[in-house]
Length: 190
Image 1 (cartoon, rainbow, N blue to C red):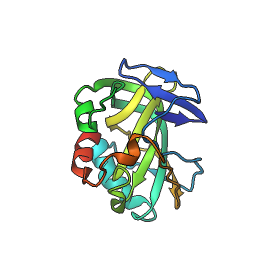
Image 2: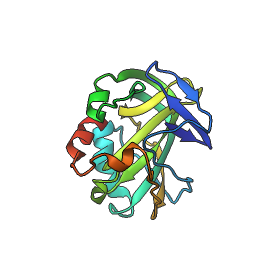
Image 3: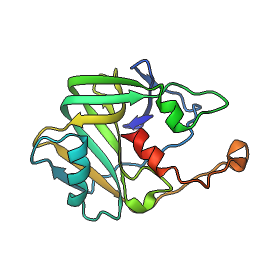
Image 4: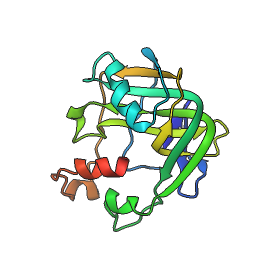
């Protein structure tokens, strides 16, 4: 799912982007009304590893949640989408084995996502969780790797609070969520 300018889009495993109606559900989502609090300008080209290790040190604090917004032309963009899953639902690790991966060069679009601090381990992906959508709204997905050029503007929104909504009935209320899946999640996200 990619939400940009109030429009909800879905990146499907066929490599295409689809605008979705309001009645489509998702098992998990993180979102915000983006209100830029600051800007970071990259001082060199960065891949995902370099970006993930250097940009957090330039935030006002590593202990806050940040929404991130980047628009530009990216020399390399590697994205993925996991196909729709059906009951009995596999784990995220199992589902990721069927992911479709797409690589684009010199693609122009927007990167949106979040940076979560380490103490979010049981709530969300620690570090960056980023999605890409092309300006023509034809390509996008979860970013596995990318190249961010030198002098790219990274806008961020400090997100000091959040609301979590949990289902009160259905499968969620009886599933065992006591296990630590952070290492599996780290593998799947990267």
